[in-house]
Image 1 (cartoon, rainbow, N blue to C red):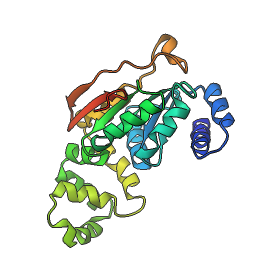
Image 2 (image 1 turned 90 degrees about the horizontal axis):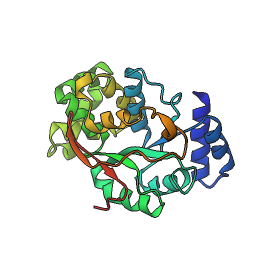
Image 3 (image 1 turned 90 degrees about the vertical axis):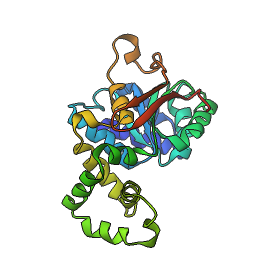
Image 4 (image 1 turned 180 degrees about the vertical axis):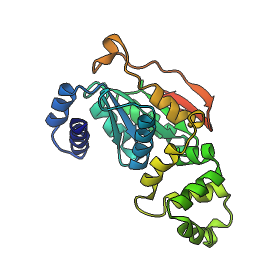
Amino acid sequence: MADMGAFREAVTAWAAGGPEGPARELAARLPVRTVVLLEGLSDVAAVGALAESRGRDLAAEGVCVLAMGGAMSVGRFARLLGPPGLGLRLVGLVDEAERGYYARGLERAGAAQQEFFVCEADLEDELIRALGVARVEELVRAEGDLRALQTFLHQPAQRGRDAQQQLRRFLGTKKGRKIHYGRVLVEALDPGRVPAPLDGLLAGLRPPAGPEARPGGPAHPMVTTRAQAGGPSGTYSGSDSS
């Protein structure tokens, strides 16, 4: 939906110091009910691919999937979009190593009671574990990147890493590669092997009935869980500062 793209651009400009008016106006007009805060464009590609595979049109459902440009920006975007700002529901993915930072950033922004699904290392790691090393290598070959992977594996720095770690690092060695494989890896998943953080995120984006469908409605319930679906994951409320 073109208007959701315009909202995403307006929010990004606002977060960079621009005016808030365009984002506020678009949020009311569309209307936007939920914003998915993700670290980067590869995460956006993965969420988009899974939504498409399940016949979901997130923009039409009032969901904006937004790349923040890094974990350090979570507090800024939460302040603008959450209860202190536009009053939208916030959800997202967070790497385990960044969990404490997210909790503190959300709390300082006045947006503590939000739902973020925890990846053990990052989303690429979750996807590689769900698919298995052999299947990911097949996909790399099919995408024409086998020679690049073989060259990468011969680097001295890779000798002490296991195959899963090597593949994860390979995906980040060239601009645009992580974004491309964010979609490729998700599209290759069996329906029953979707990593729990990604599966939980999308399941939680189902349009609610009643007043929760409106921007500024009650927050989605916070329940801390541990689940297994292609790899370990958790869900946490931003008020958990552990």
